[in-house]
Length: 146
Image 1 (cartoon, rainbow, N blue to C red):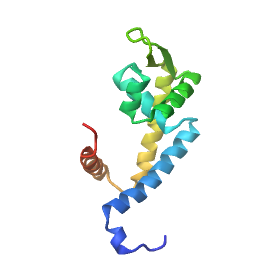
Image 2 (image 1 turned 135 degrees about the horizontal axis):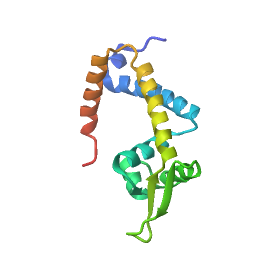
Image 3 (image 1 turned 120 degrees about the vertical axis):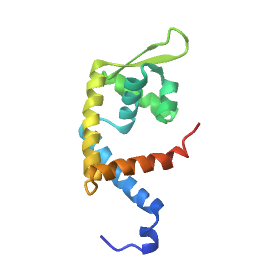
Image 4 (image 1 turned 135 degrees about the vertical axis):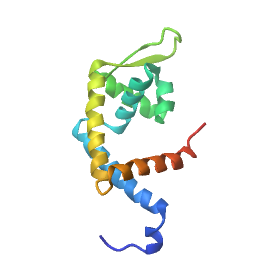
């Protein structure tokens, strides 16, 4: 690898950005191999953890733009990973529910992400990985909407 200026190499923002590019590629490659996308994982994970939800609620929870959410849910419905039905409590809303096939896909995607974490963080011990995850979570928390 070409040398980079030291003033960059010591900036956490630069290091995080470079690592994020690499991480995104690893995740994208893994999900592509499974015929999935990152949006799919976010939606399936939210439905599994929080239960059925409207598309708007899923979009907010998963931080997915409304138009992207519609497209992603359409793809998941076509694949049989979620069901979309009218919400009986709100006539203009649809409720999205995880299916059994969707849970199996989520578990496959979990395995892929676990492998990505191992590949990405290979140079770190288990304790160092836990420390890094905790520190990144703390820094990110200051930017989370309340």
